[in-house]
Image 1 (cartoon, rainbow, N blue to C red):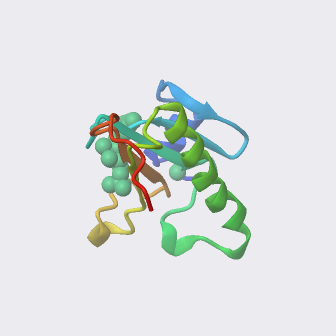
Image 2 (image 1 turned 60 degrees about the vertical axis):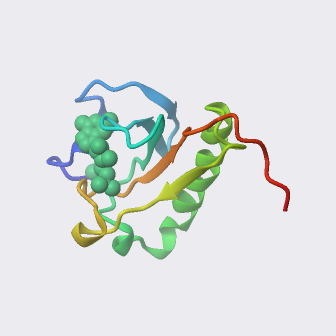
Length: 117
Ligand code: 5GP
Ligand code: ZN
């Protein structure tokens, strides 16, 4: 764990934040500067710098990020209208906080109905 890491501080409660989801492995909170009506950050409690640094043993937590993303999308009613899941990787990929996190971005038009295949 890095003591200079903003997301580690949020996870430890050193910076007060409201979690929409919290378990032994990860937390979910709203992005402070949302790019859309719904913009969540899904953050593993383990400090991992970027997707370049995930190890074999991190597979379960990375997979769990996606499972919880699916659950949060449903809870916030963007599952049918659609959303984006995004990892920014390193500076050139737009990463600003060097603690792995998955963006869930959506909610532009929740009235959109399921499109036929
Ligand atoms: P990145 O660019 O690293 O993929 O995403 C970092 C995200 O964290 C950005 O979208 C930014 O708005 C968000 N962010 C930065 N500082 C804070 C903060 O203190 N609280 C919250 N909730 N989000 C933050
Ligand atoms: Zn961290």
